[in-house]
Image (cartoon, rainbow, N blue to C red; front, side, top):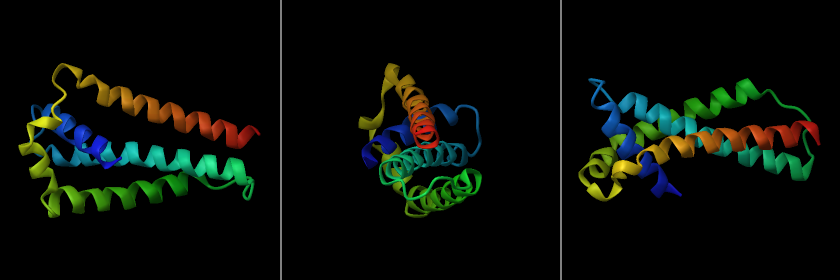
Length: 122
């Protein structure tokens, strides 16, 4: 699963570097946003099948997950220099298919919405 985030990091960084002096921050935010959506989808599915909690404070949970993942990703990609290693490896380039990173984001948002709907309504 971490492999897909390397593709996202490389391609979003490449496009963000054209417009930003410090492209790391928006890229880490993007990756954290996608990871947060995926984690929330898993939480919704777990709660849907177990029925152990009927309601929870989504904004607070979302904010906590987002901030924690941003710090973890910042440490992983910037402090541990993994981002530089990813950028040196051209195999993560999607070329003309770089729009797939946006498709993945869109699908993760849709999946979060769908699983949230299942959890809330059933």
